[in-house]
Length: 350
Ligand SMILES: Nc1ncnc2c1ncn2[C@@H]1O[C@H](COP(=O)(O)OP(=O)(O)O)[C@@H](O)[C@H]1O
Ligand code: SF4
Ligand SMILES: [Mg+2]
Image (cartoon, rainbow, N blue to C red; front, side, top):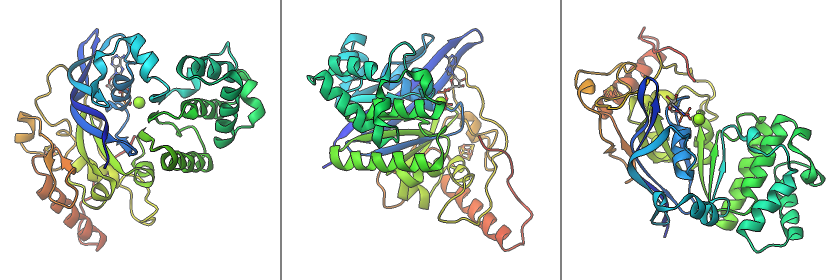
């Protein structure tokens, strides 16, 4: 049976700024099970990195978890001191590939020196064993083993990114949080890294929280997906269910905004406008100004995540009109494909 590894419950994260409080994550709840590949998708600025940073205890100094909890193997992450978190969880249990991965290496140390430092704190392995382990990870991410003794500046940007990925995999953590890990990599390298993550998962039952603005990557590589819009979780469920039966207007439009290998010839959706910057209190649907199906009700309260009627018991969507909006969208698309509608929804994606 799959056990929950990481649980976020009603998570709200805010930043204090000169212009007042900014809510980056609002009331988000989700569960990542052991061995599960979980994708978190949404446009730039919707709160994905903030979610990751609150799990790893890496929020910027002006940011804080204002309410809600995050549990790792049943224990509240907020209860760990920084020292305990570093000793017990970081690297060995939870490894983080930050969004600006290329800048996360220490410029003054070779990659192998950094790996030995981390490995010595967190394992009983000898220096020789740690270097061998790093070499193995280097070859997996497509770097020559001999280059473990290079300094970061001796690598190109893409190679530095791969070195960071190798370091994250190196102690075989239970949860890897990868924030836009492959954005700077070419498609072949992306495929290679995902293939390897699949192998690790088979071998070690590793879980992955994959964060990306490109939902097609999640549909190809994850089992579960959560789609965020302007701090709120719009929809969440198995990839199969959300792919086949999306219900939140942002989710179904966003899904259609990316090329899909399964439907290479379809037109790409464009979502008009931009997500709002949200203050302290959010008592409305954050998609309201962009949603073709919005009503007054959507301005008066934030929709709760409600079950979607399909085979996936975890599938939920946070929209007051989730079924009727999807029906209207589908019938509009069908009629525009057959040429008898002039309505098109157009705009730019992330
Ligand atoms: N240190 C910070 N101070 C103030 N606002 C921030 C800070 N970091 C992020 N934000 C804001 O929080 C929101 C979510 O940002 P982020 O989590 O980086 O989104 P994403 O990773 O989805 O692009 C954005 O509106 C962003 O401007
Ligand atoms: S119909 Fe309303 S609740 Fe649903 S996404 Fe649109 S604005 Fe939000
Ligand atoms: Mg980000």
